[in-house]
Image (tube, rainbow, N blue to C red):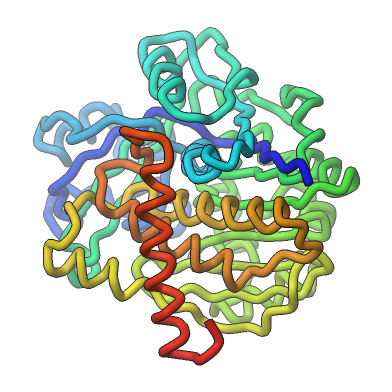
Length: 400
């Protein structure tokens, strides 16, 4: 069957600052003391406005103190929606499967730079709107020594023109695609507040709907004692075929304290399948919806090959920025391939293999978006990692 993917949500200019010491005095001075206070949190995100209130001084001064005035190590296309879609588009390009992004950027220099980067990828971006104002950005502060050497990042975001991008701004052609993905909408606040609208409409029209989240600083700061909403959650959850979250987002969205309980809560509220990531640790997943082959709750290990290459220098060491987004892109690729081959129900088990391999492979480059030198480069490389990962799963479980 004809298959295509449309995605909407967060896109931004990603600036990576490396060598930050989360245990050092400069970072610790601006580290969160209570949930939602606007201070920095390893692994999580705050908005520049909230950090300025916490610090009592302009963000530019805070950044200079933490980084020692160093320039970013890299600048790249970022955002949980667009990065996942670019990766899926690169993997799907040899098969001729189109992937489209719907979003917004500013008319400033970074906005033009984003357009240049996107133009070097196979992503369709006719509906990547340019509006007067500041392009959204995220500063990723990276400490490669954190978490016993696996590394971690702390994020500071400015929504820019994305603050006012709404469901009504998504072109109607978005709903013509058989796979629809909404990503990182907490960084697109107006859209996030009404996330139920596009998810419900796409689901009603028969699309396979995927929602992947990002740390919701606004709702955390508004009500740190209550679970985060996803628009009208009572509408969003039943219309979501696959929900991809990290462990902290799962905890705050569900109000449950373990991945197992969080996944059970999401399924009880109508979500068809759930994947919960934990950085460099195992992934938890379950599938019970009509669109998926049933998958009993289980843990998936990270890729032993990627871990070994990072430890032994077998792969060029990059950083963990964008690993989660590429994980989602790998899953999108696998679901599209299954749909293209005529599968009526999606196999999450094998989709996660592509997600794990894709997320791990992203550690070998700086920033989340890797530009291919030749069409199919990523597909060839990651296919090899998927093969090894399936062997790893077979050795561990006997059911790869």
